[in-house]
Amino acid sequence: MPDSTIRSGSIAFLGFGEAAHAFLDGWRTNSDFKARICAYDIKTDSPDSEVRTAKRADYAAAKVLGASTAAEAVTGADAVFSVVAADQAHEAAIAALPGLAKGALFFSTAIPARRRPRRALPKRSRPRVGAMSTWP
Image 1 (tube, one colour):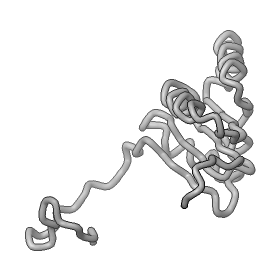
Image 2 (cartoon, one colour; image 1 turned 90 degrees about the horizontal axis):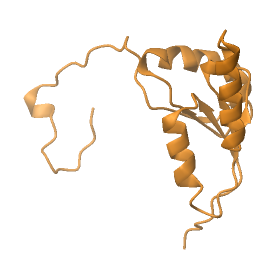
Image 3 (cartoon, rainbow, N blue to C red; image 1 turned 30 degrees about the vertical axis):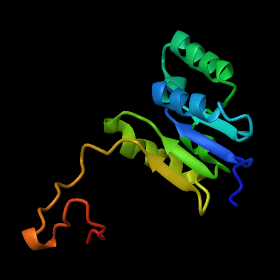
Image 4 (cartoon, rainbow, N blue to C red; image 1 turned 90 degrees about the vertical axis):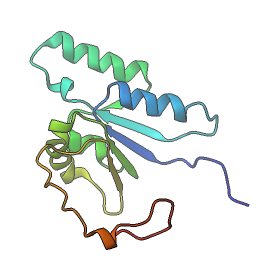
């Protein structure tokens, strides 16, 4: 029988807005959720001191560790969730690389605007609707 306990570990968020809060709210409905959470949001670097202070208060209210850089946030994390705006996804990933541990899982909810267009596959290669298939 599988173990349903959520093990202790470390999770990092790049971006700490509505999406990150939604993840946390869901996970925290499970009383066995014990992961260490660290977050970094670009608002931490805002030239406006009120914005910086508000983001630090947001970290504290959510009971997460607020990092000063993306690399600091992901250091030691088992899983990283990048929940930034699509036009910032690539930059966020690059900024996190120096702290990313080998074997850490990196999830991004946004696709950079610079992505290459998809090529259409020949009709015979497309899987049938409802059929189990491996996409080439």
